[in-house]
Image (tube, rainbow over all chains, first blue to last red; front, side, top):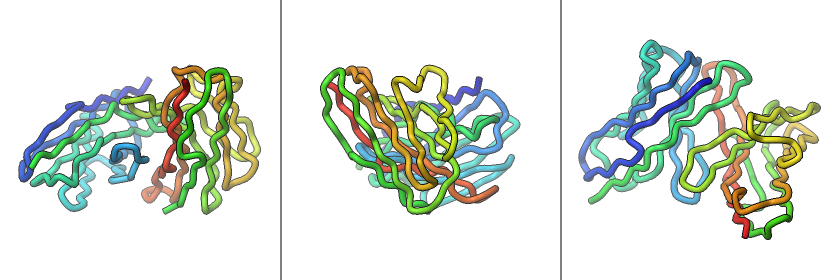
Amino acid sequence: ELKVEQNPLFLSMQEGKNYTIYCNYSTTSDRLYWYRQDPGKSLESLFVLLSNGAVKQEGRLMASLDTKARLSTLHITAAVHDLSATYFCAVLRGYGNKLVFGAGTILRVKS
Amino acid sequence: SAVISQKPSRDICQRGTSLTIQCQVDSQVTMMFWYRQQPGQSLTLIATANQGSEATYESGFVIDKFPISRPNLTFSTLTVSNMSPEDSSIYLCSVEEGRGMDEKLFFGSGTQLSVL
């Protein structure tokens, strides 16, 4: 059974600092997603990572994937308050095209 | 990206009643997914709805409790039956768009359900 673990579950950051959220998964998968969720809102797709060594960047966020280690990271550079949200990683299950989500990381950026 | 509309956006219901949630997509999609997000929790897949066939339910979810319809390629409904306070959650529909490397999963705005 595919299990997805995120850490930390809660992250309080100062503006301007860097930090990394980690996503480990237990079985081989073809695809990993990162989503952002604002309070009371739906999920916004941030990145889709497909292959080993994949790296994608959008603004202050950069995601990478190591399929051998079954690890993805979401790196935040010079955090700003607008990045405050909950971030989920989700891994595609090997059959049936289903996503298994991590528990989510609540990010709070303080000025 | 696909535009996904869900109705209602929120509702407060009495124990023992049922609520039907609608999900409308602005393009034809093969697979639609229904997820539940319990308060402060992550998302859990309830079922997959393909047009023209019975929905496929995940472990822990049954058709009698969560009947799903998928009458065409742009629409689906999820009913939460005989509700109890434990059913209080956000329910989200989701669709795939694109192919291969461009394939992504998009989510509707969600239905926030509170059961008293």
